[in-house]
Length: 140
Image (cartoon, rainbow, N blue to C red):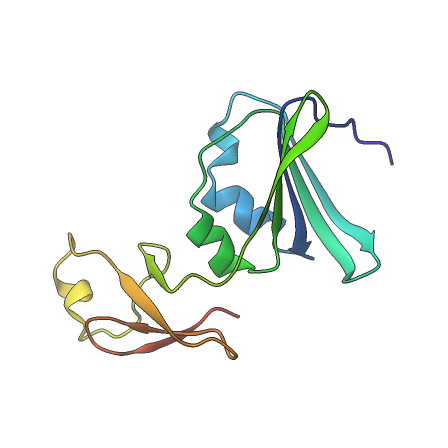
């Protein structure tokens, strides 16, 4: 398979195999007016298989969302066909409006305009807790 290189834009690399479409959705790449390539199940020495997303444009991204979905992602910023910046992600300490609290008694279930906020409480197990009701949410 032959996918063109990116002249100017982003390459979102080292995505856990099968997670590219979730990232595509969160970043609203379907609404972009530029070329987007999704490579699924590419061979990887480190991961066995990985997904890659190539975007032929620089876009604003919520790095916390990407870190929440997969903290092993690497973002390569490309200009003139060369990597000019490499961003390594990690689990965010706090996320807002990425996932919803599943507790039906949480204030976020009653008050629609309240942000859904979660704080990382267990980095090893990727467990977040709702800041309002303390309900646990696992990112896996």
